[in-house]
Image 1 (cartoon, one colour):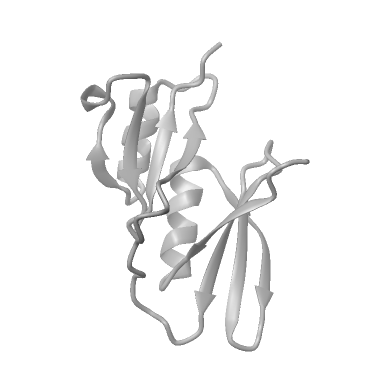
Image 2 (cartoon, rainbow, N blue to C red):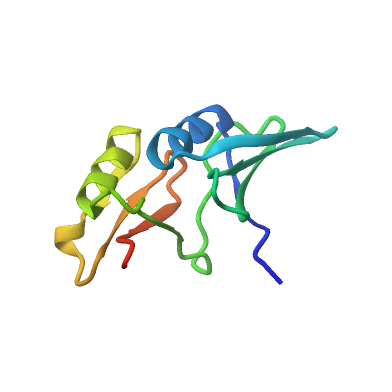
Length: 125
């Protein structure tokens, strides 16, 4: 079995799509229009697991984050330092949340435009 996707609810799908494209190189692979909601599937070229963004029609504000959900994690590219990846995510619209120098290992955290935490992990060889 393989992980298929992680779903995140969004009030602004365009902003979220732009962030994940610019910050992590994800691409919009599929869009499914339903009667009351729209699904957007994003994935990096060399990956199988996706991020599913769900926009419930008429819900145009950010969702409250519960205590149960922690974060999603993304590895850096092989030729990219952790610091470079972190700065790229911040420049793409991510919130400068927990930079690598504040974390005790080879990682850092940004928040995406909806406030979901994204852990950026240094790829180990």
